[in-house]
Image (cartoon, rainbow, N blue to C red; front, top):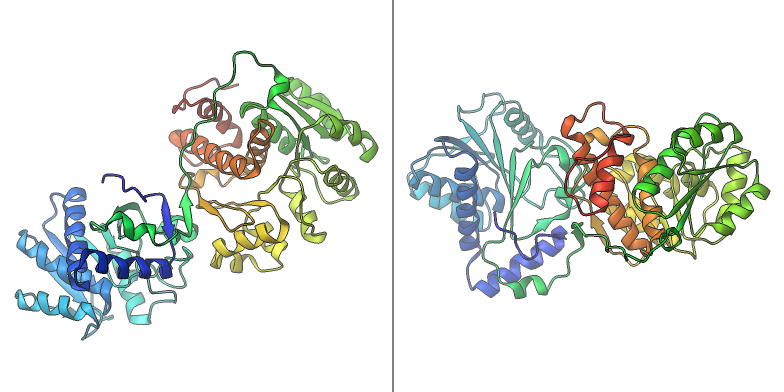
Length: 499
């Protein structure tokens, strides 16, 4: 589908209600006419993705999402498709009632869902059960239908939102449709891009239904999708001092790999110099494996002090540990008031000793670390990742990267971006260490904290997608280094040297 001018804008349910009301007024149409536009868009999507499918079953709920389904049924029959229409209830309400009557007036029959019966035979199922308003678990009968659709082995087209998915949070309080394609109407929903949504949305498309530009101008989007942003080209007259000096602080006994990954990622993302402050036992191995890293044996704050003076940006936490050595280095590093990326045990120490940051700072927690920072259970973080990211950012006066499917980037003013890239292969050890190094390198090259976080998250996730072309299972953090270098140089390719 062609790109919509607002295809990067993400809205809450409340904002979508405003857009819908404003659209009806601006277009001077009824709610039913807007439904008819949605049904036509759905038919076009159906025929484009499944051009040879002639038998469809449309599952309609009692609200406006069901109304979209009834009108799709009318249009699909006119187009020559064999349509079975299965309804959750005897009645519909609001504009959906007129849509239901239009289906009946066209000679269509309605089968009522019997949770003890089998699904009607069809080559494609269309989910029009629940729209954006559902933020609770579906009722038992509806849950049984959703589970039957998911288990049918047939493709599924979801209208607006996969039923059962909370379109604000991206979570599933109960059963939820697993769609092959989701066609979102009017504007994009933020919950379709983060959390559990990754397993339910499938291919996501947007149908704005002809809504004029001025409607969107009236409602400020709650969040945005990250876009690919090129890094500025380098001057020909340049030296390593122009691109900053990153100091990675970490690598407790047995955890040298975390510090090395962060340091090497900082080099590959363009930092001019990268030093590593670590345990003495790791220095030889780091020098041998990656001589471009300047590894220093640091046994405590005194040895760290001169390294802090030379550094322009700190990457604090990879392999740091929470014992006396790590805690002492953590305190010393924070007292230096340098631009900072804080991850891993650096965040766990922050949870025990909270503070607000004055220097440009990026925190990169996964949901478990975010839960410790906020004093909540991990499940509570996942119930509303958007609120958690914003609260962490406000509380610590830092840019926050809340990692996971649909990584979020939030700043203390409430701005929030969502990462549309990444894959399950990146759920492996060391990926967070890479992100720490990348963001630190971008800070060192002159980005502010927000730019460094957004660019770094995008580069990291896209490098993961390029590296996963050989398969997601078994993907290593170090596999991202070659595509990372290519992407940082504006080369949209996974070809590169593998050291």
